[in-house]
Image (spheres, helix red, strand yellow):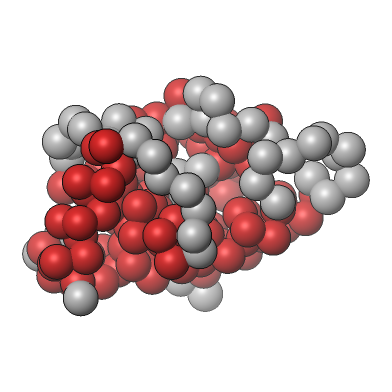
Length: 156
Ligand SMILES: [Fe+2]
């Protein structure tokens, strides 16, 4: 089992463990599962297109909304992902400190859709808007629309 699969499996297990937490979630846990998996696939496509090493890009896409999974809320979910993502990856015991930092930072920065980040951060942001678009998740901020237009042109 490769590390992408290990992260995905561990995340599904984690999501299932929140099923009985009684939180009034803004995004259903089933959506979180679908969104993490298809964001990961989009991450691979974007990484291959852009000449970025895919593994860290895919894992960053898979974990980008971990802050919302843990807290149940959209507000500040990017910032709220940073420490929990580090903890999650540390527990898996498969990643170096540097790798953990890359993934946690990509999650922390992914809501800043108007900022151009590292190639991996850009892949996470672009995969996120594309994936939200395909499930009709409302995107009202202008910078989300700009990004979506750009990534649609690139991929479609
Ligand atoms: Fe997302």
